[in-house]
Length: 128
Image 1 (cartoon, helix red, strand yellow):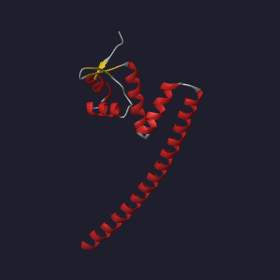
Image 2 (cartoon, one colour):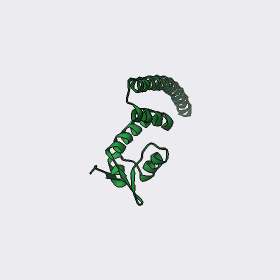
Image 3 (tube, helix red, strand yellow):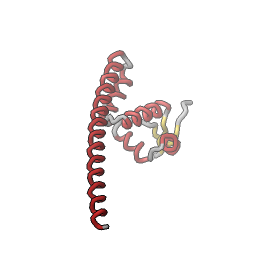
Image 4 (cartoon, one colour):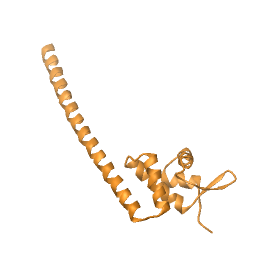
């Protein structure tokens, strides 16, 4: 018999809520076995959830993740590997751009805070 995992086991192991798992099921990202109202997750579902959560952490949309998972399911070919690689490179470039923008914003904010501190110091000196 294939090893299965309950929704509680999946939630505990992956630190997600039952609602999250049901949402991913609704979006056709997971397909647990059903026994009445019980959901039983396979090792395949666990592997897919690992990839889903990793994709979310990397900032991929659920649609991007779904498409990548479909490619893995369909052929596992060189084309699939190249597509995944290209999407990963694109996402990395986006993240690096966002980081550069965030670094610039942080530097600007620090400069404004320094100016504010100087103004406050001037007020305090005048009050003495």
